[in-house]
Length: 285
Ligand SMILES: Nc1ncnc2c1ncn2[C@@H]1O[C@H](COP(=O)(O)OP(=O)(O)OP(=O)(O)O)[C@@H](O)[C@H]1O
Image (tube, rainbow, N blue to C red; front, side):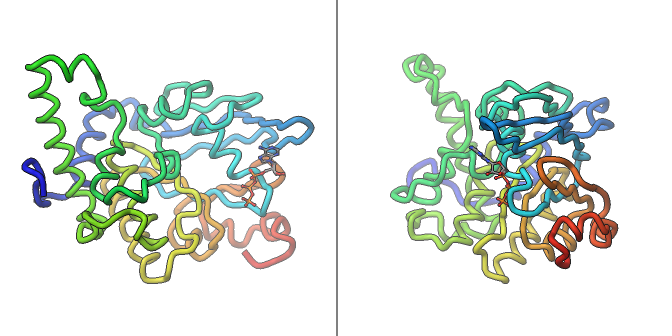
């Protein structure tokens, strides 16, 4: 353990939630946190998204579902700056982020778990956590050569290290802090991905199939963490093929089909929507 390393003492998620609550004005509280308007994305002759519009309410767990090829991943990619939309707009917290780059969008408080650089297998879990946040003082060269600023860098690193411990504890993977990330199981890696995303101080997280490959007990734990974070004010939009997860854990569901929004509403309504059932080729939703 290094000199500045400290053991967990507080709830990381509470700390980050308080930070984000402070940053949120009352006017913003009343608007949807995310608005997607008439989004179109073409790849040559293929129209992957064909005029999709939807909103995500602050503090919800919203599911984005649809059959294979419906345009869900492309929508995530357009929201998070991986792809530039061909038409339409994406507004986050009242700010048009349509033409912003991925890292700028993360700085605004909208993160997608796998947009955070994937964990480095030959570094420990704690070291991976320390690399997650963007724009730390330590990244700035001039600060590293100025003596007063250097103290500031050390202070900030200590704070970050404490938050890293707290966040690992929240996700119940603090006992793995000194293990190499490459030795984690698939499910533990998902928890690390979420922990790292949380360290960037987001207000909203986009989760792309968070339960894929996760065993049932870890899935339960991951969902409990998502709900705990929701209670603290975080907003989630998730693409998930597991309909039990969607129907039991999302209060609002958006259904895409052939690049458009086919239906949206409470999970119970969506479940019995004939058009939705038809879109899934007559299968049960
Ligand atoms: N980079 C690309 N170049 C060309 N076509 C693409 C590209 N990305 C996606 N598409 C096409 O866009 C359509 C929507 O794909 P997308 O991956 O967004 O669907 P999806 O709903 O996420 O599907 P799945 O559930 O199978 O992951 C598909 O027809 C796909 O082949």
